[in-house]
Every structure is written in structure tokens, then in C-alpha cells.
Amino acid sequence: MSVHQNVKKVTTHVLSAMKLKGEKITMLTAYDYSMARILDNAGIEVILVGDSASNVMAGYETTLPVTLNEMINYASAVVRGVKRALVVVDLPFGSYQGNSREALASAIRIMKETGAAAIKVEGGSEISESVTRILSAGIPVMGHLGLTPQSINKFGTYAVRAQDGAEAQKLMEDAVLLEKLGCFAVVLEKIPAALAGEVSGKLKIPAISIGAGRHADGQVLVLHDMLGLNNEFSPRFLRRYLNLYSEITGAVQQYIHDVRTGDFPSEKEQY
Ligand code: KIV
Image 1 (cartoon, rainbow, N blue to C red):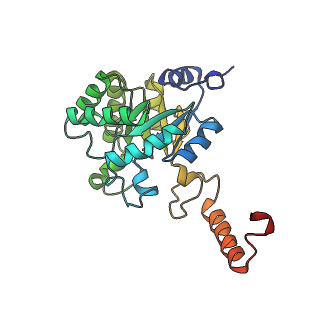
Image 2: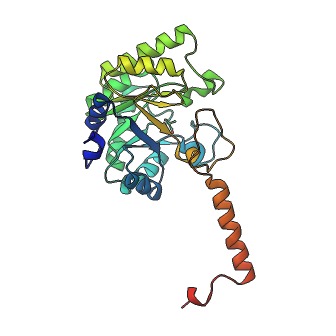
């Protein structure tokens, strides 16, 4: 029987075992109790409370504005909906880059106040001190390399990263460093598929792709994008499994019609 079918609770060790056996790891984002419950019951291995909450929940243009307190609110709701999946929470912009003591304090608040199992941070060698300090407190850390949206003001665009040799080499070095420091997995965002395949081949820890192709050890998507709640965002890597924007619009329009015409509530729908 495969590893993922056998486990009652997904841990970081389960993800390592899945990589060893060549089983693909599934991961999606969630930001609230109800969605997290559905994802968990559907059998997803990892739920990421991503700082993409800043975009899809709060309506900001970038991931920068979301605060640690807001991430804690989203994450504690998610944890209440989850029995089996591993819940990972993004440390938001400004809560870990400047100083490793502050990074540890932020990570501890997440773990204490949400009940999540791990945190995720963006970057490689620049944040190695923060990663080391967080790990030293026994908090599992997931890395994130390639397109790191918290650095959008440095990059200037959301284009594919690590297309030239120097950036690809730095990414590989960062991935190796994160593994050496003790991270349990790394997200690779929007980099060439061949490079993601090389990183996955080099590392013992799982490399999870978002827009980094099929050779990685698993895949992650932003829930609102894959459910089609958001019509405007259509990158090449995104597969939409539903078009909830139009489904919900249709349902709401039907409701408006039914109320206005007196069709709702009917005799049966009242006391
Ligand atoms: O915040 C997020 O949703 C993420 C994913 C894109 C991996 O970091």
C-alpha cells in the first residue's frame, strides 16, 4: 500500500517517505475552516496557509501587506478544520527577514497560537540565520525559492525566474543550503521544469512545484486559482478545475430572482 493511503496523520516524515517511494505530494492553500475541512477530507497531504491570503482574501495587489496577526487568524481557523493534513503557515513579509530573534519570535507565535505543524519562509542564504534559529527551537521549516513574491519589488515582474546560468546556480546552492540547515521541504515557484528536476534529483527533501513543472516531488496551487474563483489570473502553469466565479454568480443571480419574484421561500421552506 502506498505511504499516503496508510497514514492517519501527515507529518514531515511522511513527506520524506513519499519522496523515497516516488509518490507525488499534493498541496493546496487554504485560509479558512470550511475550505480546509473539505481539502482535508478529500485527502490532500499538505495545506499551506499562504501569504497569498493577502491577495485572495484581503484584496491587496501583493503579498506584502498581510500581517502576522492576520496570518495567525487565518491559520487557526484552518487548523480547526483539519485532522489529517500537515498544516504549514507562511511567515509574512517583515516578520523574519531582518533579524533571527524576531524570526524565531514570529515562528513561535504561529506555532503557539494556531496549532500548525510547520512554517514556510522565502529565500536562501540571505535568511539562513533566521532559518537556523527557527529550526533550533524544533519548528519544522519549509523553504521557498525561485519566484518569491515577497521580493516582487526587487524583481519588478512575476516572470519566470532562474532562466540564466548564474541565477539557476544560486538557486541550486540555496536549495542545497536549505536542506543542509534542516528544512523538511522546499517550494520551487515559476522556474524552468528542467531546473526543478535537477533540484529534486539533488535533494533528499521533497521539492514542491508551483509553475516549476512535472519533475518535482509534488505540486501546490493557490486554491482560489484552481477553483476558478478568480477569472483575471491565468498564468500558463495554472489548471482550473472549476469555474466557481461563474457558478457562484449564477447561484446568486438565481437567489436574487427567487426572492424578488416571491418564489423563495416556498410554503415548505417556512415554519
Ligand atoms: O502564499 C502562497 O500561496 C504560496 C504558494 C504560491 C506556494 O507561497
